[in-house]
Length: 145
Image (cartoon, rainbow, N blue to C red; front, side, top):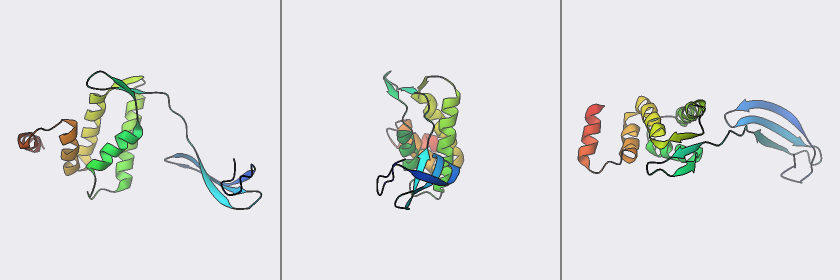
């Protein structure tokens, strides 16, 4: 592992632990003695999402994450809970063992998880996911809550 400070190629691992990002390693450069952190992440197989109009696109966790985080913006729900929920959603999607999944399945799964965590975030997400056109759509969804 190249040192980010002096580019020396030899370092030693001083600490190793599991983290949500993968395996976290604290390293120390054997030349300049500065410490830095590296992450080892298992690469998952390709998963494709089939959109409403039929086009295929590679599953993008960042896209999923940004949509969910937008729904929880300024809500009293911890970032840890939201991240845990996102991890659970991705795990459920990948456990299906298929190379393709419909966006509607992902949307329904996300909706159910958000609904359990925060009703306001759910309405925000549903308004985009279900493409609310006017106030009647909001009223209908609120009645169902």
